[in-house]
Image (cartoon, rainbow, N blue to C red; front, top):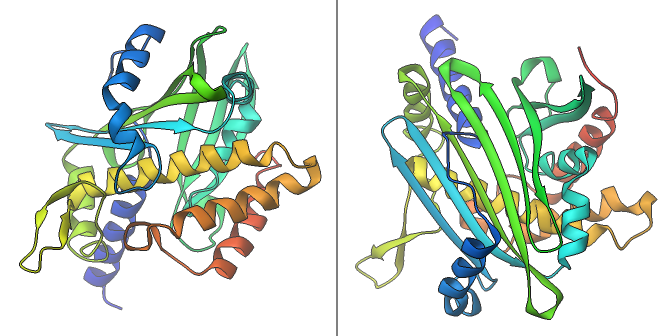
Amino acid sequence: MNGFQKTARAVVKLGLALLVASGAMNVLADDAASLRAKHRELREELRSNSFHQPIHIDSSEEGGTVRGDVYAVLQHPFAEFSHSMKDPSDWCAIMILPFNTKYCHAVENGGGTTLQVRIGRKFDQPVQDAYRLDFALRPVAATGDFFESRLDAKSGPVGTRDYKIIVSAVPIEGGRTFMHLNYSYGVGAAGRFAMQAYLSTAGSDKIGFTVTGKDANGQPMHIGGVRGAIERNAMRYFLAIDAHLASLSSPAAQRVEKKIQAWFNSTERYPRQLREMDRSTYVAMKRNEYERAQTQIQ
């Protein structure tokens, strides 16, 4: 392989990592009233949509910012959701489920918590070869009728910056939870080049969930590019939260295996968007990565 080919491959791999990393610009916080109003606005769509689940996804790309939002009804009580999402170890148990999160470990420092996250490729790889993102975990609200928590990382690879993941929720009828997950990040010229290189090569056939029209045969056409990638990631993180919550009813010793299997099962509902590998490859990889994440790396 010549030098140009090596450089091109490195750029493509970096582009994939950037598109899977979650992050962002400053966004307006939810409150209980606005989130309940959003639930009322989306009520009919949540009851019947192409996801066949109560999910709504938005995405945007403007200037140097990429943003994704997922609104979803979780079939889990609000108290359970709120309790779990306050625990740093539960955050890592969620974040490591997507196929190319290679590592997540919560570290206490000076009264706060940092999640040491490493984002890499879709196959098994050493932690030191993955891209580093250190998220500060910041609880915002945890009352009887509203929850919000944030992850912030000031910088990422190749000039990316201001990463944020924001999760907020309110209780709704039927003992369920209405959740909003927002993630976004700022990207400079180098990061944009890496993304476009990936999207024009290895990611050229990838699609998101938003329907942009119909083809000549009347079949739905879906958004691609950076927004398609954001939408895939939004779905992956929603499914990770759902799988984690579902595992909590199992004995502690069985929870890791249950959430790994549940996440893969859920992604298989949307093979055009989310299939990256077969079950045996994913399960074996995640078992190893969960075990590895129990130890802090330097």
